[in-house]
Figure 1 (cartoon, rainbow, N blue to C red):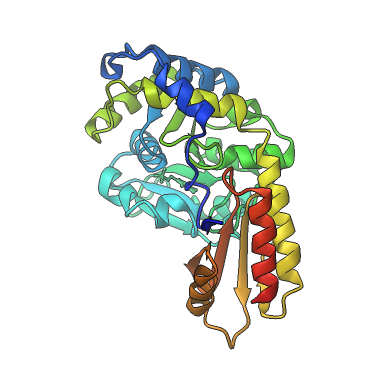
Figure 2 (figure 1 turned 90 degrees about the horizontal axis):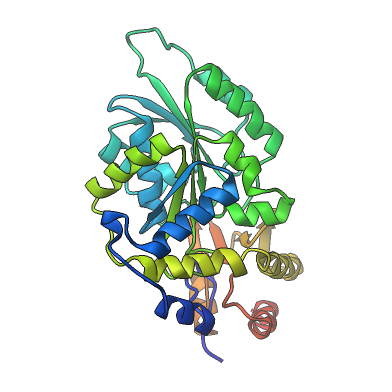
Length: 340
Ligand SMILES: *Cc1c(COP(=O)(O)O)cnc(C)c1O
């Protein structure tokens, strides 16, 4: 058997069926808005979320960064959890691209409360403080181990955001994992947020691409920012075709990834070398090994058995299940974990 790659749900390769729709896509020049497949993907996503418009991006990072840019002016302040991807894993882009400062909220597994936000959004008319302009949510949380927000809390945060004239952005790189796990709908989220980014190349299995959703006006601004960032693509319909296929075929099956993650958690729970496992809600398993074991040694030893995983720092080990992680691989992994 080949390697069992569980470092991320981005390692998937397009299936034969997905490649076929890509190869037969109708394309045009998307910078001139004349790629029919890109237009169809954008329309499809906007309809799913009940939002006015959508824009195809080469990456989730660029989609988030464009959102931050359109909601803010240099010197403004945005609010996000201390573990947020937009703050930790986008190269400092919020500061570099938009010139905004970040107020980090001390949340739990990447999630904070409306009360926490309310206590920090102060000083709007004080000349000393930055203008408060934006709040970013991440669902599911990446560093938080695929945790899903309580939708009621998101509604409360909406109220705090709107009463303080803050934009409300959702980094939904893994939003579909949350929707499937919690039986929620895209439209619920479309009603609440000003802008939403979703990734097609994570759990959904497309090779490239993310989408930013929002109002017509915001997407016009985002179109300009995307061009400025160098993200205008030409015959991008080949990629968009994979995105359409992913939205049509690969959402419900995320349940299977979640079930596999839970099965791995149960096995880890029975292994004496495991110190702690974070709650498993979706497709991410975060666990810690006992104090006497070096996390990097553990990773190397698993690698020698053909199992790849990564460390998230602070002793966290991460396993992510995905489309290319088969039932046979799960069996093999369970065997290796038990034998370690
Ligand atoms: C992966 C990810 C992104 C975007 O990543 P890209 O690699 O740029 O597509 C954004 N937010 C979260 C939470 C992610 O996990």
